[in-house]
Length: 331
Image (cartoon, rainbow, N blue to C red; front, top):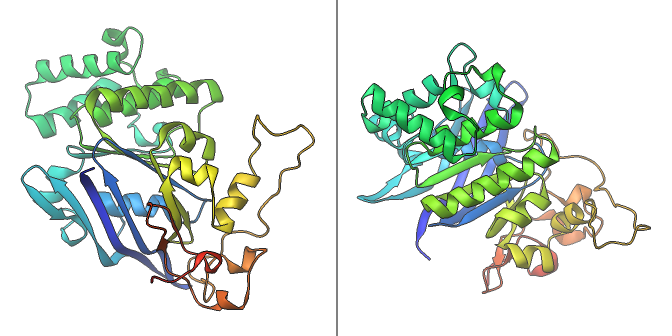
């Protein structure tokens, strides 16, 4: 497998009145070509900030990448995105063209005063230098590709004239209009009902196969991850606490946080009498991270060793865990 994006020791902090918020505090992962990495965790764990760091969209101030590298393997060489000026020519050439992003709520991402077609055409013309007629024809073709009926008419519709599912499809069409090598999807189905959610996920899987696009899929829904991801990274309070192939994560979860997430979700295979087990407490404020293992205050298996944060230990088969119950330190 060839790497497309390598995140190494990434730290993105926010300077606030309450102190320094360590939203991303030493994250490492790799996305391979034509593979999907699912990043899961509760709200406030740093998933979206990680995605915004990759795209160069962290608002500064108060946010800033303070350490780490984001190596993007372009066709003409490797670029460290963390070292680039977010408004510079390199990031402007990559953002939206080679790396595209779908945000959680399409109604707030689409401009209400422009038609859907105008917004897709703008993205196409900016990066592909097509003439207006050719760009419009491609926009219609992309709306057709994502399953929007009557695309010749829908291309002139405003966002409020489309249903939630259609708006999300339009966002997918816009993101894929320039054939990006990496697509970042930040909770793209959270605001949709279950039926439309399934349709959008099926659409993204088929488009990934058709265009050969790699994906970073951010969600709190483990069921979604099971259906779309090749690899999974479990994130908690700015850190990756477990990662591995999707089958290994679901068949042999190791970190107590991963186990807690799985136990709090119903399964069709469970007996009707099984009670869901919630994770006690909530994710701490990023400005007030606990000392030692960040999950220890909520962990039912915490012990004295948890006063020190364990390293992420790989078992040699691509399954890594940051927990003292599984070694905790690099050999």
